[in-house]
Length: 149
Image (cartoon, rainbow, N blue to C red; front, side, top):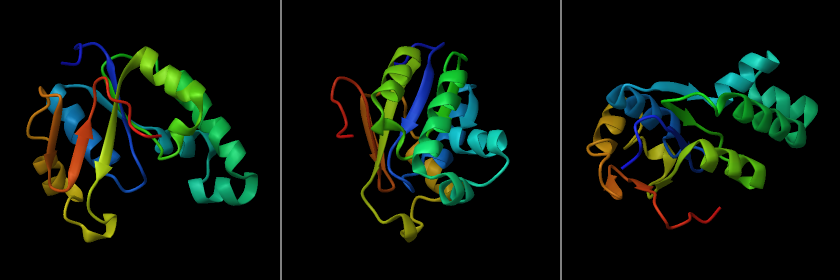
């Protein structure tokens, strides 16, 4: 079980449902919700695609690391992270130090829509107490097993 004061960092590939599941999970646990990509957009004043196009991936990853480091010390927050956040060891260390890292893996195609939106999130978040649950094409894995970054 996750200690009640720790943050939860949702990781996984783009389209795995991090934001959708994160909002619902935060609501259910009475936590705050933060989407790191949205925080980066607010900080930079432009979209992620614009950041990539004008400044490149390296700059974006630097922004991502800075936003994560600045937000990680908050308590009781579910964070939806960007798909590439785990590429940097420093980011993995920050998330592990300040919360529980959860990897969402989609067994379906993101475009299928089977697990998108509130209905999909409701199906995905039936139980949080176990070591693993699966439903609606999404698996949540946590504990001692490391996801393959």
